[in-house]
Length: 129
Image 1 (tube, rainbow, N blue to C red):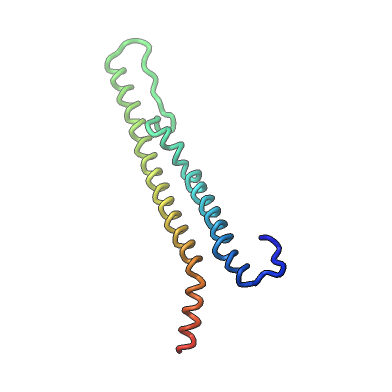
Image 2 (image 1 turned 135 degrees about the vertical axis):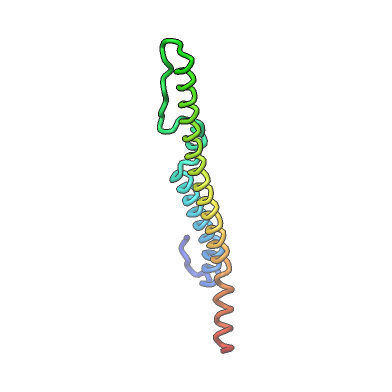
C-alpha cells in the first residue's frame, strides 16, 4: 500500500477493503487450491491411473506354459485393477477437498465484501434495540 499522505482515510480504507484485500484473498485462495492438488497428487494419480498397485508386477515365465501365462496375466490385471480403484478413491477425495476449498473461498470473499454492510446493519439494529 502506498504512503497515505493527505488522502481521506475513508478513501484509503475503501481502496484497501475493496481492491487490495480481495486481491490478497484471491491469491491466498489460489495457494490453497494448489496445495489441495499437490497434497492429494491428483495430476500424478490421473497419469498413473492404470499402473499396477505398488508396482506389483509378475514376470511371465521363460518357457511356454499356458496355465502360467494365464495366471501371470490375470495377476497383472488384478494388480492394475486394485491400483486403479485405490487411485480413483484418492482422486474423488481430492476433488471433494477441492470443491470444499472453492466453496470456502467464495464464502470468505463474499463475507469480506459484505462485511461493511453487515457492520452498518448491526449498528442500526443496536440503535433500534
